[in-house]
Image 1 (spheres, helix red, strand yellow):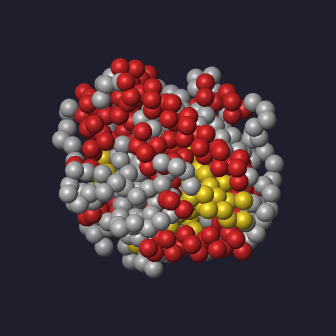
Image 2 (cartoon, helix red, strand yellow):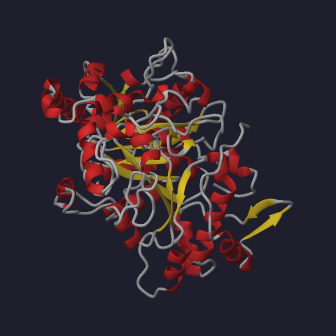
Length: 529
């Protein structure tokens, strides 16, 4: 096991937590180790405990805060605790209003999403003291649904890396293997939820930043249709691609969180289409059982193929999952997209518009800087910060870039190519591995294995750019493990505003694939994850 990173946060309510849990026998200390009684595995189990009166919200929140205190020094997933979490829990316990769907559910929020009174820095040390005056729209909706915000979680600076490191909080580690990366950019949310530091969490996805951590940390990650969840109060990266969404340990939990965040927001015009007929809400009606039976799944073989540097163990798990889908009644059709690599390269919009979009967010939020270039100039960059460095040097106005219009045109072409596959083959979804390797080692990342100028460097072998750059929804579901015990995620891509169909398929995929295994990091504490 590697040396634990330094702790960056303190919990002022630690004594209060211990008192709450000890009073009802929810935890004890034994030979200097924290021993907690088993926490519910999912939101439905938690709600059943609340209805029976077996636990209070204060007890559940206290137990999760103690897990953060005990485990996060090794993970480094949390950057700022919500010091009002216990007060929020007490208010829910004392309340008499009807309980929302997330009543008493402890959640964590990625640190590029505004939270009133809690620092929001987008992973940047330069913004560490920035405290928003208001919650992002999605946070307002979570609170209204009864969720308790536990903490803000780590991400690479301005969400511009596949890996878990930042100038603000250092390196975040994977709970399945502390020498490995949890994936970016929703690194902290992925690591925290996988380790049971929260019941669920919120990330953001512009190129794969929900689905890569989901794949590496054995979680369900949903990239919703753009506009299903408001981006108001979320630091932008590529506005037409940005999509906040849930990370959870089950598809049902992820869907419940997504449903709570969904809704019209006049501050984000993209949300209008999502709430107008005929688009159904995410969980308005029960999901159809055995959704894979009779489904037509397009297997995008050109991104399943193992090339040098990919992991054949991941390919094996993927093929086993495809076999299970076929046995569950799905028809699998091999499909392809002509010139896919060229299209993904030509529709990569970060270097054309991210500087503008980030700067707009900085100005909107009242941050102490108004240009990402100013922030980058204040610190020494890692070799792995190549994208951040390039964005800071890009044009402030994409309309001055002659390739910008061509990129937008080709994005539409990519959308039509994908939609054409659905129409031609009457598909329910496309399917492929989210990433063609398991969680990489921190040593390989620091040695420049991915997306750097090192001679041995290669692009990160992720397939998540397809849904992101087409602005389509996608769900990553854990479907097994490598021989070394590392999670592997399968991705389902669907048509815009048909998120519910994807969730139904993911629910059935979850049913027929091996059960999620808990990280070994938490096993030593005698508690489930």
